[in-house]
Image (tube, rainbow, N blue to C red):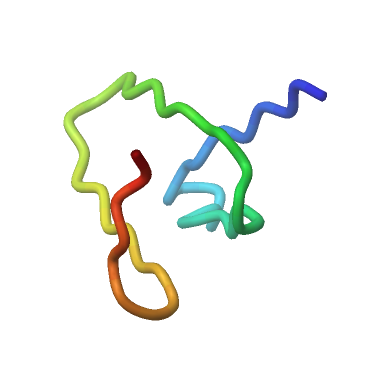
Length: 46
């Protein structure tokens, strides 16, 4: 499934919640700051 979400502060769209285990990517069109938060301790995948 390919879903695209465009974040735009002028439209009030500031963020998105991505379900655990979902692969994702980010395209940045304008200078931006990205804040990522996760539940629990960081455990790198091997």
